[in-house]
Length: 211
Image 1 (cartoon, rainbow, N blue to C red):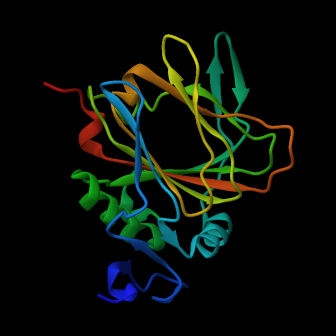
Image 2: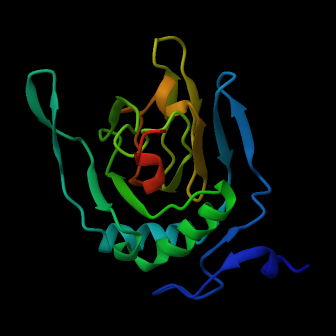
């Protein structure tokens, strides 16, 4: 089988088939058990053409800076976000990727949101993806584009964190009870860092509690 046929590739907007593609076999996937019920899968180099996709999303994303409540005050989030509740409204280049992830993880990723970390001072604090993950077990893929940034995940009850540093085109996939029993974050950092985009895929079926 040729290398070309082993890659899922498609004509997507400004891309041609030789620029954007992904490994349908997930050959580089490495699953890390967080505990007996939770795991993270790191898939280095999964997406080909990640830098072009980064530039497309940075230019065409419906970016906004959100505010949220922290204890008793409203704060501005130190990052930009664009949300697409319906995958049909997302940039075309992301729809084939969502379909490939749906095949891999046996659920329908029918929406997504993207975050832009503009510099090393942008971040997100400890949290879980509760609005989109109300089941006891969920699988949440996150595609990293642009400059590497640390991604930390730690037990909800406290303790040491597990660190990943995904590069452009890498996948970080949280599964099992990782949204129930664990929290994750992208911290600020002192060292210089270029902009990074995370593409977070969500499945409507996971936003409904188990019966």
